[in-house]
Amino acid sequence: MIDIKPDFKTLKPYSVVKQDVWHYNSKVKIKIDWNEEFLVNKKVEENLIDFIRSSKYALYPDVSSIDLNIALSKYHNINHNNIMTFNGSDEALDVICRSYIEKNNIVVFRNPEYGNFITFAETSLAKIEYFYDKDPFVLDENSFKMHIEKFKPRLVYISNPNNPTGVLYNFSFLKDMIVSNPNSLFIIDEAYIDFIEKTGYGESIDEMIHFSTKVNNVIVVRTFSKLYSLAGLRIGYIVTNNEIINDLSLLRKGKNVSMLSQIAAKTAIESKDFYNEKLEIIREQKKNVINKCSNLSYVDNCYDSSANFICLRINDKVFNRLKTYLYDNGVYIRDRSSIYQLDNIIRVSIIDDMSLFIHYMDEFEKLIKNI
Ligand SMILES: Cc1ncc(COP(=O)(O)O)c(C=O)c1O
Image (cartoon, rainbow, N blue to C red; front, side):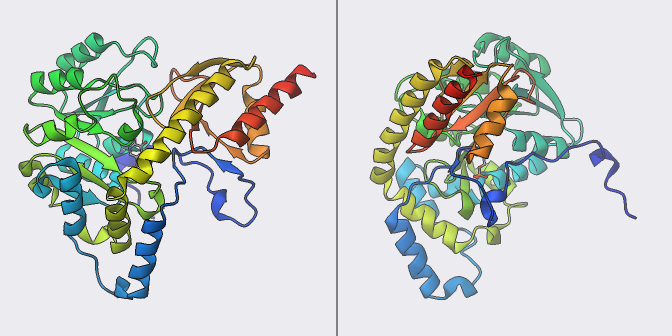
């Protein structure tokens, strides 16, 4: 028997959602547990089919993903040398941790943070110094900044908007922290940035991307898994300065970014109008869900969010019953209540049709009133 590394013995893997959507007897009717979107872009499908028919899947992929990088560089108006693609943004996050974190280096998060990144930092043997706001749904900028100045971390990770709270950090606040802490590497994970409303962030949603090419301590991370509905194809990218791109090429595995992923992502980024239209529908659905849920007697709090998900604080007395009721009726949501400060919280992704979710939330109200 070979033991796992002693440092890994007490660590726990990232907890994933129910996987039964892949099994023949799955109950799922609406999957709103992993912040995926389900938008069908016909052009993406056609280009994928053309590629499969060409039989070029026999070849290893273009390891530099140059066509995609050029499409992204036009889209963001930056040099393609500032972009690097990965097999999902998770892979980028893992490579970043393994490239820059040494044992006992300090990494700062504001609680709660994206669980998978926490695992990457833990398995890089970082020493994690959490920052806790009194209310995780309300950011106290000053205290967070002071926390970073106190710990002088090697790395700060911020999902912006935050997963799971949906809290948005404003660009000028982040820029100020980045400039004042030149020895800390800031990872700004913008998986959900497409969903933010036009106000409250900065001039444009690409401000951090542009800034990251000019300084040497920021990496912006983006993904095609959310708005672009390509989670299963595993494609994400980073934008940063050239030295960091060079550093990361040591551990990046270029062969991991398949041609199917590259083709789908390039097609998606070149059909932005399609996604913009759908974005409006998703935003409307979010408002609608918040309106409805705020009026339910068993929902103690319904938190608006800048992302494609919202958190609901469910009355303690019915929390477990609601969860079971939703699962039994094929409504798959994410229980976040095991996270510190998120007691009785469920997270619900917002997709382009939330009617089934609203229906079962209403039905549950009737059910508990009849008891
Ligand atoms: C903040 C954040 N970053 C990254 C990811 C993972 O994205 P990808 O599918 O590109 O690995 C997620 C997925 O939920 C996320 O919430």
